[in-house]
Amino acid sequence: MRSSHGKNTLIFAAVALGTVALDQVSKALAASFLEPGGSVRVIPGVLCFTYTTNTGAAFGLLKGNSQLIFLAALLLTVLLMAWFFLVGESLGAWTFVGLALITGGAVGNLADRLFRGNVVDFLDLGWWPVFNVADAAIVAGVIIVLLSYGRELFRSKP
Image 1 (tube, rainbow, N blue to C red):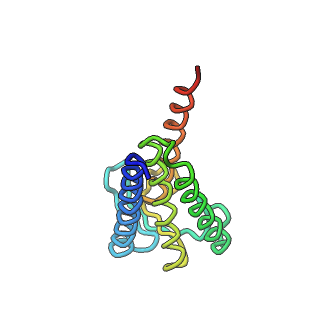
Image 2: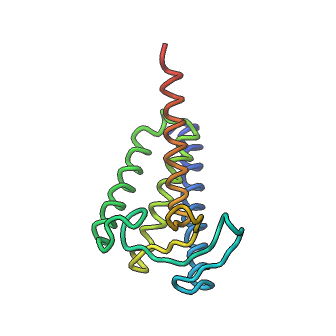
């Protein structure tokens, strides 16, 4: 194992575990302090905390198919981990951060499905479906991976 791979593995582990921890703590706080369906304005016109649960995929798609979504998310997480270990040495540090955010977000939502039977959502922008820290991490991770990987592809062109 080269030292850069070891460093990237450490980055991956720290970001993924930190994402899961932040996600689960924020969901526990939301479940403790918010009534189901209740909403608290944090920044008027910008952000509310609105407690909802979701048995479907992102944005409420495929509601009631929790087992199917759980299996698909588990498969995605395993594939991400396999990709990480197979091509990890050739990826840049930012790609590792992005993959770690995606993995941490997926594991955070998987934990909800496993232990709660649904996913807790509480971040409400008013103009977007209610979401959580794991969802935000997944979106941020996909953006980082696409930008980082695109940059690496652009640099490798003659």
